[in-house]
Image (tube, rainbow, N blue to C red; front, side, top):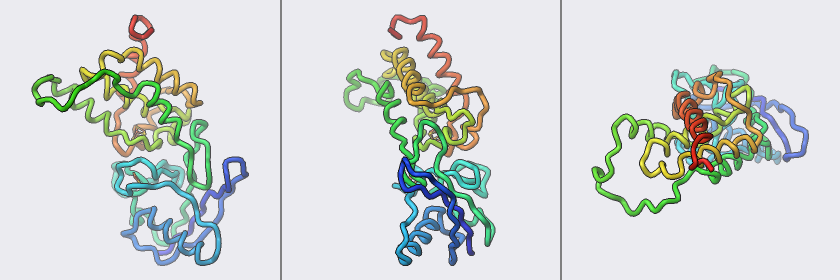
Length: 253
Ligand code: SF4
Ligand code: FES
């Protein structure tokens, strides 16, 4: 199949960007979207032109590095109804000779570094503000030494699957990172090890979220609709309940 691409090109953080058209020929429908970009870059390199910069690492849907906006959708729209990561989106999801727009995440908290690469270090700073336990949790213990009921264990595991890709931010009209932040908060709030710092954690992480320039949540739900790990919207409810509780708690300082 052959593809017509319109790709956001921006030389650096301060340069003015623009969409540039390319034709990519000989694309296999079994290629991932990133492999199709590899093909484009091989062609550009042979021609002596600057290849398109884009982020990636695992190419297995687990590291969260690869997000771009494809035809207006964070990570694009796969043929299957389940959202996926850009690296797991395959070219069979597109028609032959399709025209595809490729842009970086667009959000105040994710400034563009070059072409399709954005700076997502704001997520690291939100984690540094509280996404950890500082008690000594010891070495691995017998599974039944610290019972956690099934419902809470499942919620903790589900929330912990967030890969920090940032699609939730890119999809949100407010540029909010509440789904990401709430996934981390819910993960630790469900477990005994997360209790000592629970109130301080939510205050600090939400404070850092706001300081990074992410917008507020107004319950639109676009974030959960594009999340490749299907983090549910009710994690934001958990965050809000904990945040309100922290206002009345001594532990929230
Ligand atoms: S909540 Fe989902 S969309 Fe947002 S960073 Fe985590 S995995 Fe990505
Ligand atoms: S490259 Fe790791 S999730 Fe896509």
